[in-house]
Length: 217
Image 1: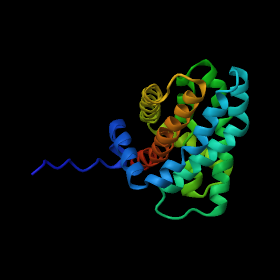
Image 2 (image 1 turned 30 degrees about the vertical axis):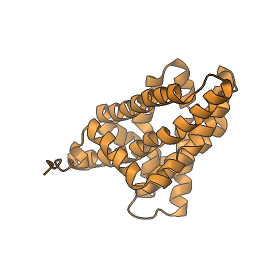
Image 3 (image 1 turned 135 degrees about the vertical axis):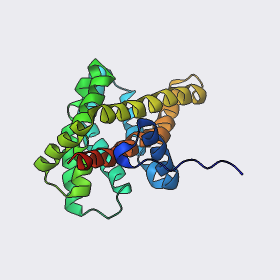
Image 4 (image 1 turned 120 degrees about the vertical axis):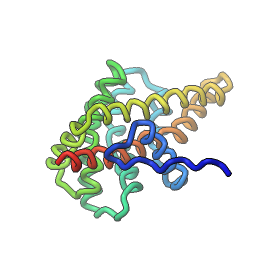
């Protein structure tokens, strides 16, 4: 008989590798709803391919912040055992849009500053979804969660980003046939399939950090 894998560690002691593994398991269990999370990132990626660098930043700050915030909120809903209220979802969407505003500016410098920012305050979005907090309280709670184990928070997000970006790059190389149209199709498909891992992983990271806050208190 094949040897059974050990049970996963509880969230307060979960490692970055287990976070990635749990994210993939969630993707498999909720495949179609999870795959739908990739529609907005894929559309933004293709739209940005027609623009120069400043245009891409404008797109990301404008419509991108609203669409990606909605995607993150939806990922948080997928991880919830209870159905969040409509008000909680709306507040979480506003929080996500506020948090995202700084991300495109940081990405212009490098990806890691954006990851560091999201690791510090990005968990305000699931806090609004799961805890029903106001916009201000959600931002405060997100900062508390991010600081509970900042290394785990940033390390988890950075690992998810590396896994997705490297896999996307390889998938694009395999799919494109040389023309601009083929490259954009490959870009869309790669983002559609792989970007949900980022949002689901960030949504699960909330439980890790919340458990760490609770264990310390």
